[in-house]
Structures are given as C-alpha cells and as structure tokens.
Image 1 (cartoon, rainbow, N blue to C red):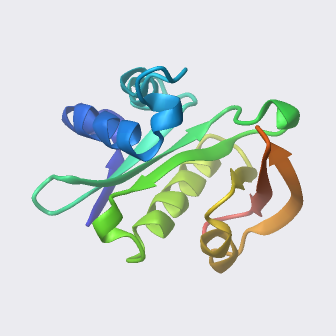
Image 2: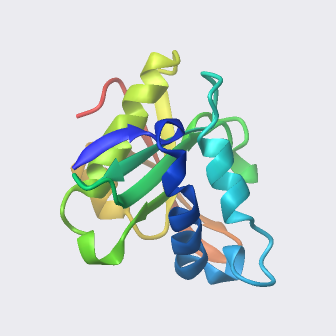
Amino acid sequence: MLIRLLREHPEVIPELARAFEREWPEWYGEGGHGNALYDLGEFANDEGRLPVGVVALSEAGRPLGVAALKAASIPEYAHLTPWVAAGYVVPERRGRGIGAALVDALVAQAHALGYGTVYCATATADSLLQRLGWVLVERSRHDGSPICVYRCDGGAR
C-alpha cells in the first residue's frame, strides 16, 4: 500500500466519488446536499493550502481509502483548526491499518503546514483515534447524533 497526496492521483477521484455516494447516500446520494466530485476535487488542490487530501493506493494503483485535512468541520467548533475528515476505506480492506496510515499522513501534513494540534470528530472511529494516541476533548452531538471530538498534539505516532 502507498499513501500519496490526492492531487498526485486525480484519476481515482471518480471512483472515490462513487464510493462516497454509496457510503453516505443521505449526504452524497440523490437529493443529498453534498457533491462528492466537488469535495474530492477540493481535497486535491495544488496550492499548498487546506484542504489537502491523501489517498491509499494498492500496488496496482487502485484506491483503497482517502481522507482529508480541512480548515473547518463542525460549525460548533469553528474556533478549532485543522480537522481530519472525510475518512473512507473500501469495506473489504477495513481493519488492516489503512485508516491509521491515512490519519498519520494527515497529521504529518498538518505539521508541515505549521499546525501543532489537529482535531477530528467521529461517531465511528473512536478506537482508531485512541489507538493512535489522540485525546478525547469532549462528547457532543452533531445533527442529532452523538459524536466524540478528539485532538492530536505533537507528531504522528
């Protein structure tokens, strides 16, 4: 597996957009408010600024997962930046360290951009973030669902 900047592999964006639409149909599917192609295109920006995306690729060049570092994520936490977000790993490859590698790569990107602390809000990846040494900031609610907000200070694990 290789972890690369998404901007270096724009050819995988359409496949990842379809995956986002399947994974989050209420947001990216028909009638949803999101646009997966647009968001992934933003994550692939070539300007050395946020957002920045990373992609996990198989040795054959197939996308195995993607995640992004964004300036903002949840409106209630607009005072905190940057955020690890939009994490996705293909279902058949979950539980094999791909998500951890993507998170670590984004923490490294954040530090390269001058950020000392990185944040993440999740409803499903608590165990991953805890294994990586992230610290729980608080439990909260977003769009009516429970979430946990984490922070990572210092370098990647």
